[in-house]
Image (cartoon, rainbow, N blue to C red; front, side, top):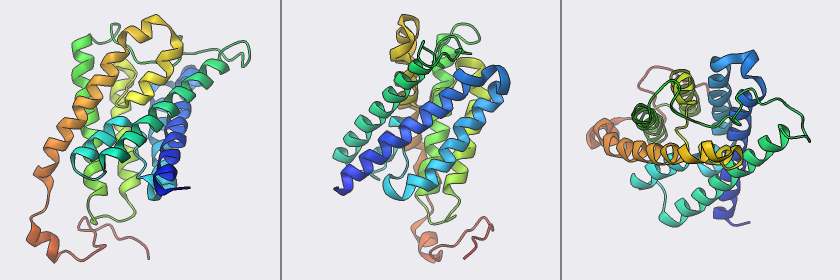
Amino acid sequence: MSDLTRKGTSELIGTFVLVFFGAGAAVFGLDVIGGMGVAFAFGLTLLALAYAIGPTSGCHVNPAVTLGVLLRRGISVPEAGVYWVAQIVGGVTAGALLKLMVSDFGEVTDQTGALGTNAWGDRVSGGGAFVFEVLATCLLVLVVILVTGRAAAPGFAGLAIGLVLIVVHLVGVPLDGTSVNPARSLGPALFAGSDALSQVWLFVVAPLVGAVLAALVAPVFDLPSSQRAAQAPGTDPTGAGVPS
């Protein structure tokens, strides 16, 4: 198996896991765990994936993250293309399995009534949802770029990424269900019906805009070259030591 194939496979499986277990937490158990439980399901799943497949593919599992990394020249265009295809396939496969679980085969009651899809209208307007998704995705992608692009805090990148995903879900679940990930939104929407499909464009476009914004903002936080040179490899300037 080639290196690119291995990376693509990791992204496909990782995206499937994130969407199935994240959105699945809402579909299967929203009445029990509530919005906070869904937020933790997404964040903790991503945290685990970061350590599991991060060394293989970087654990983007999100087309918006891949776009942000691409714009920061952390990945090549051919690699990004493979990642995007794999992520969409993973998200769609997860959506199909969620649909199977709430069908006569699985006989699970869909607690969201819409297969965990994202939507606006009840708690937030379309414009409000767009602004939130842009800002929330910008925050997520910015954290990914910064914590993985430095040797500042070795071992802690996955924790930071998982925690920020929990935060954006705590804010966004009551509004539009939180996307910040086109694959997460597109997969379930394809199997949820026309209402979800009519709104899914926003949850594809807004996260991509947020990723572009993050790539533009990231250089503000870059350390001067002199400071980077003076910093020993593996040093954690935050003071949180990493056990050897």
